[in-house]
Length: 453
Image 1 (tube, rainbow, N blue to C red):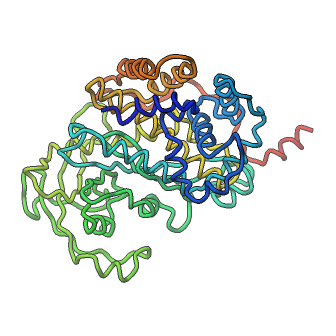
Image 2: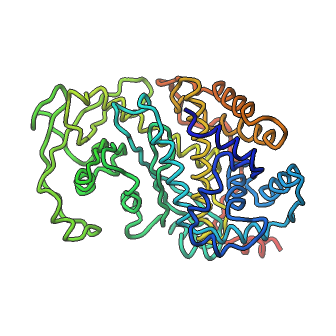
Image 3: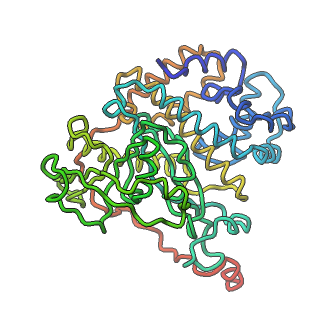
C-alpha cells in the first residue's frame, strides 16, 4: 500500500499534467471548487494549474510569486508548449478566484484520506488519536490585514504586523492536518478553545482527543463525551487533586465525579441543559524522572475509565506524544515558512494559510508511503528531509524517466532521512548565535525617514 502515490504519479505523467498533479489530482480540485469552476476564466491558469502553482510556491524556499510562475514556464517548455508570461498578475488574479471553502475542503480531504488508510500498527491501542494545538502567525502589514487581524495592542501603529491565532487538528498516526481554524489574536471568542469549536466536525465518534490543559474545560469535556469522543488532557494547574478521594484504580490513579460547571457565555441555554449533571473522570499522575526536564509531575485527566485496557503507563506514553503536535507546527511554521504570510488581503491570507496546510499534507502523504515501504512509523522519517528530496527529484519528473523509477528513487531516499531516537536528550534553553545590534522599531517607518532627511 502506498496511499495511491504511484498511481497518481503515473497518471500525471500519462496526461502531461503539471508535476504537482502527482500529489493532487485535477478532478479532486475541480470537485472541491464545485459551481465556482464554471465561472473560471483563463486558458493557462485553470483551477487545477492555479492550485498546483500555489503548492509549488508554498513548498519552495523562495516563496515568491515570481519563482512560482517561473516553475510553470519551465514545465510548459518541457512539455513542448508555448510559455506563458513571466508576469505574476494573471497568477495573482487566479489565486484571488479560489474559494476559501474549496481550499479548506482540499485540506480536510487530503488529511483524512491518509489517516483513514493508515495501518493498524500506527494507531494507539486500536484507537485513532487526534492531536490539537494552537499557535500564532503574522502577515503582511497592510490596512486590509490590520483591519481584520489587528497587531498586538502593546505596539504602536506602524511598528507591528497583523497577527492571527491558529488552531490545527492533526492525526497522530500520520501527522496530517484534518482541519484548522484561523482567527483574531485578541478579543471575545478568539481563544484556542473557541477556534477548536469552529472545526470540531474534524473529530469523529470513536476518536481520542489529545491536548494540553488549555482544552480541559468541563463543558468542553462533556460536549465531546456526548459525541462519543474520548479525551486525554493535562489537568489545569489551578485545580486541586487529592488521590485519597474517589475510586482508587492504582497508585496515583483514581476516578472522580465532577459536578456540572456554570454555563459559559459561549454555550446556549438549550445546549447547556442537555449536558449531564456530573462527569466521571479519571486522573493519573505522571512522574517525569528524566534529567533536564523542567516539569517533574503531570496530572492527566481522561474519559478513558477502563484501567485494564488503558493502563497508566499507556496514558503516560500517549501524553508524551502530545509533543508531536509541536513538531508538526514547527514543520509548518519553520520548514514551510508559514510563520509569516505574504498576501496583502485577508481573503488571500486565509487561502495562503490553507495552501500551506495542503502542501504539508501532501508531503506527509509521501512520508507515509515511504514509511510503509521501509516498515517504520511515519513520525520517525524527517519531514524536512522528505521535502528536500521531493523538491530536487520533482525536476527530474519532467524528463523521460519512468514514473515507477521516479517513485522508487524518492521512496528509497526517504529511508535515509530517519529522525534520531533521542528521547532523553538535554539541551539548554540558550542561544549561541548573537543577534544583530539594530534597535527595534518603536515608531512608524515614515518618522525615521523624515528624521534621516
